[in-house]
Length: 299
Ligand code: ADP
Image 1 (cartoon, rainbow, N blue to C red):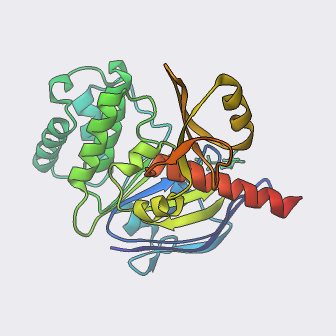
Image 2 (cartoon, rainbow, N blue to C red; image 1 turned 120 degrees about the vertical axis):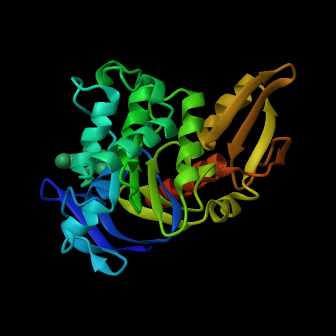
């Protein structure tokens, strides 16, 4: 399966470009779309699942323009929106059964089987008779993913799926997604949380102010940050000064002073060592570079 996004633009309120000339290709597996709040991720996801039209540009799934084949496409999509809501008057299993019927599963016996299996899969089987509206935040999120997966979709789009989940639930959720990612299936995960992507995705893109700032593998992004991430020990005064000049990723108070991890191409005047970057360091490094280039271009 393959998705090609070709010169996509979305304009809100006549002249605000929420998406600017987005061109991306996405292959089988898990694709992470990473970017700060307001970058345009939800807009792109809504266009991809055909809930919204772009101002210009096209998206092709296996060579077919999605806006010309909306019906066929919707049948193969599972979507978990950021602001997922549901009828609170139904029991957990009833809600899932209803979602399955809506997605085209008309055979009652098949549906019963799929509902039970999915409840088991997301760890809600014991809560099947509880009112859906009374579930905890994490359980509601899991019910959200269950309704997105119930008809075994080939394209799964999840928007900020781990927001509001505790660390345990977050890990469980990521594991569930990696488990179902397989041949001839694409899972797109849009998030501002770097760890959602580093632990699961084989492909990714960075979206910033409506533009694709990077597309590749997480390793390629990490490669770009190599040599620019430092660990230094600083006094409180030095830390204040450094913060004004460089993006600081973490600070920990130690006996000998502040242990600080920061991004800088050079670090003259301080005793420090370069460390091996991870995806979070690479993200901060890239966004910092983007911001600097943007400011230089502007002023
Ligand atoms: P993200 O999901 O990355 O946080 P969004 O796609 O929600 O980004 O929003 C991108 C930008 O478009 C933001 O500046 C947001 O305020 C704006 N925006 C989103 N939806 C609308 C809308 N319906 N009308 C006008 N502006 C919008």
